[in-house]
Amino acid sequence: MALQNINPTSTIAWKKLEDHFNEIHKINIKDLAKEENRKEKFSLELNDLFVDFSKNRITDKTISLLVDLAKEVGLKEAIESQFLGEKINVTEGRAVMHTALRSNSDEPVLVEGKNIKPQIQSALRKIRSFSNKVISGKWKGYTGKSITDIVNIGIGGSDLGPDMIVESLKFYKNQLNTHFVSNIDGDHVSEIIKNLNPETTLFVIVSKTFTTQETISNAETIKNWFLKSATIFDIPKHFVAVSTNLVAIDNFGINKSNVFPMWDWVGGRFSLWSAVGLSISLSVGFNNYRALLDGAEEMDLHFRNEEFDQNIPVILALLSIWYNNFYGAETEAVLPYSQYLKKIPDYLQQAIMESNGKGVDRNGNKVNYQTGTIVWGSTGTNMQHAFMQLVHQGTKLIPADFIGYKESLYGLTDHHKKLMANYYGQMDALAFGKSKEEVHLELKVSGNEDKIATLLPFKVFEGNRPSNAILFDKLTPNSLGKLVALYEHKIYTQGVLWNIYSYDQFGVELGKELAKKLLNQ
Ligand code: F6P
Image 1: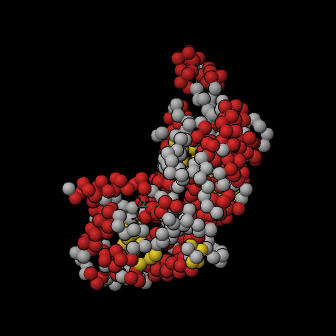
Image 2: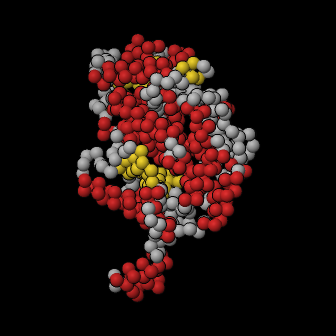
Image 3: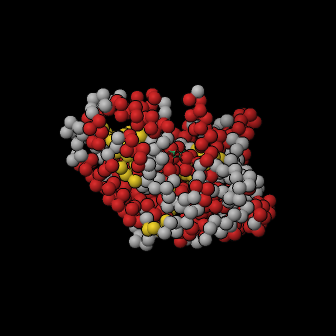
C-alpha cells in the first residue's frame, strides 16, 4: 500500500463536483435550512463531541460527491498506510507515527520491521516518573530547594504544541509555573529569565534536531546565566533535553539520564504527544497528560474506522476543499469560544500551513489547483469586537469553525449563557443574515423611518456565510486531545486529496540558510 499520486482535478468525482458547483453555487443557506431534519442529517457525534455542519452551502449530493472524491484518490488506503507505519513521508523517507504515541492497544506497530510500541511505553514511563518527582518536590535543585518554575526552550513544533496545551489546560495546572522561550529575539529570553531563580528553575530544552539556531542560542544564553550562580556540576539538576541528537546533547553538557527520546517518525508539529510534551505533563500532571493522549486516540480510532460520510475529520476536510477549490475561498477562521484556547490559532497555523502549504504534487509537478488554506482566528467574544465585521459584511468568503463548550469550568453560568448565546448568534448571523425587508421594518419600528433611504443598504447582512459548530461538553484534557487530533487528521486528509506531501517542510529551509550566510558575513 502506498499513497497514490492522482491529480484530484483529473478524477470523475472532481468533474461531477464542478458540474454540481455550477448548478448550486448560488444556493443560500437560509433556503437550505428550511429542509426538514437538516441538522440531524448534517451533524456528527463522537462521545462528548458534537459537530453541526448544517450551516454550509451543501446538499446531500455535495457530500456524496466529495466522499466519492476521497474514495477515488485512495484516502482509505492512505489512512491505513499512515497507521501501519509505512514511509508516507516519502521526501524525508520516514513513517509518520504520532498516532502510535497515544495508542493504548497492544497491537505492534512496525517501523522498518521493528515494533516501536515498547520505546513509546518506556518514554511514557520516564515522563511519568520524572513529572512525579518534580511535582512532588522530591527533585531538588543545586541548593536543595524544590522546583517552582519550568522553562521550555524550543521553537515551532517544539514550542507551539506544548505552549498551546499548557495554556488551554491552565485550569488543571499544579503549583509549577511554566514558561516558554522560543524567539531568537534576545529580549524574549531576557524577559523570561529576569524573574527566575536559578536555584528553583528547571529548563527543558526541546529540539528534535538540536541544531535549531533559536533553541541552541537560547539554551546557551540560559546556561551562561545559570552558571553565574551555579557550577557545571549543577547542570544535571536543572537541565533536561528532548531530542534525537544524542551527540549534540552530550556536547551541551546534559546528563544522559536527563535525555528524553524523540524519533524520526514523529514530525515536529505533531510531536506534543511524545516527550516534547514533557512540560505539559509537568504542568498538569501525568494523569492529565495521559487523558490528553487518550482523547486523541478516541479521535484516531474514529478517523481510521468510520465511513467517510460519518467521519468528522474527513467531513471537515472535504468541506474545506469544497470552499477552497470550488468557491475560491482563501482563508478559514478558527474561533474558539473559550479564553483558554487563545493559542490554538497560532498552533494550527503551523500544523496546517507548514503541512499543506505545498505547490508541488506527489509526482513532483507544479499543481494546477489550490492547496493549503490560510488559517487564522482568535477567541470569542473578543474577536466579535475586532475582525468579525469583515467576516459578516466584507467581500470575502471565510468559512469558520466555532469551537465551544456546553459547560464552563468555574461554573459562572450567567457568563457562560451569554458566551454561548454569542457563539450561536454569530453562526446564525453569518448563515441567515438580515434582509432588506427586516432592516426596513426594524428602522420603522424604532421610529427611524426617515433614515431608511440612507441607512438601509449598510444595515443589510447578506448572510450565506458558512460555519461549523464544534461543540464539546467541557474543556478537559481528554476533549482537548480529541480536538487537536481532529485537526491533525483533517490536515492529512486534505494533503492526500490535494496529492501533496503533508509531512515535510522544505519551504522553511531557504530563509534559515540565508540567515546563516548573512550572519557569517
Ligand atoms: O523551521 C521549521 C521546523 O523544522 C519545524 O518543523 C520544527 O517544529 C521546528 O523547526 C523546530 O525544530 P527542532 O525541534 O528540530 O528544533
